[in-house]
Image 1 (tube, rainbow, N blue to C red):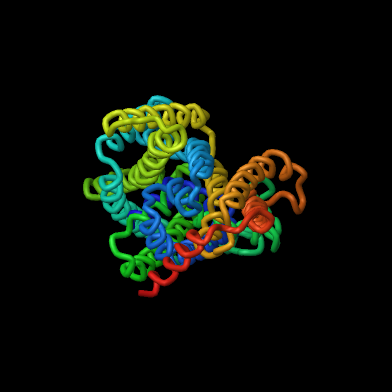
Image 2 (image 1 turned 60 degrees about the vertical axis):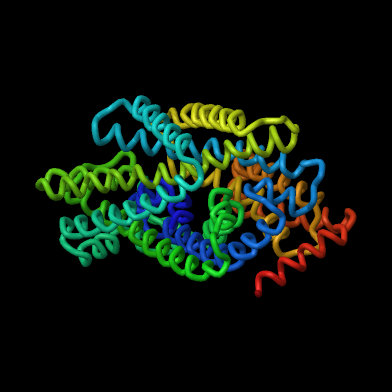
Length: 461
């Protein structure tokens, strides 16, 4: 539950319902399907093997694992992967701050920027005071609050909208809204085709799971490798149900807007906030439930932000300064460095999220692509391919990261077949580069191969 709470972030309660509210089921639906498949496969193939492998090589962070897996004495892999974590966690953290700003500005009428800064300060304060175990435990509690929020909104929304049939009938009346092969276009009030290439591109969201540091870190910290099967079932069921509910909330919100129960939204990502505000006007008990909904939005944001900030700060203090540059830091100084990095990342996140009209969905999608393409292919190669080496891993990380930026800001602008989610081409590029460079450079040493074989044996014991 901690892993899934840190995964979903504000995207679950704001981004996904917002997309469904505005354009219907195609984009939201295929994204959810891709993420559900990715969640299951990540738990099925990566979790147990990574848990055993990371223990075997003595790794407690993702950069640690790559460095120790390939016996990289020069710490090049550690430095590259730590920098990647710092680069892509900044926009990811920004999406969380943006969600908090929208939440409090809508509820209390606060200035968006003031609300965002206060939220950032609170998240940093409790992240610094706790650490990994505290973040994991609070993520569990926050996932429960998120679940309560989703259930509360869908029950209240369906009741006020006139029932499930009314919601479905409204969706059917909108061109392309309830289709998985067409998408509703609010600008033309018509539908546009949602072709096979776009569907494949959207499903590619699932590839991102193999490279998410804040999720992978949970796999490395699993108490017992034999508990992975139970964890996989819990995670997969929760993810499927929560995303389905979030999409349906978008459908409910569309009808409530038409019925003037809630106002028409300039920002569709506020649909749950507006519905909860309306709920709070219907008596004391529902006002308390609405408060839980607002807490749920805050919980999903904080559960991801604390995990990301911890991963980023440890990358700087443990991996870059102590690992790469051999700076001797005692425990107290290491903690001070980590906290300083937290503050710097938070400031950069606030700057990126300063635009009140920025989309949580779009910011998260870019950061998701960055991690998925840089770490995903290399992680799979490290766990399942004995012939992979440190040269291939480093080249794959760099190729994936470069292609994410190149495709997002240059190639996709060409349109047509190039207008696809940058994760897919960047993931494939990184995978190909990892394989080619590994094959044309010297094979791993015998001790690395023996270590690989011993891990494979331990998994089945």
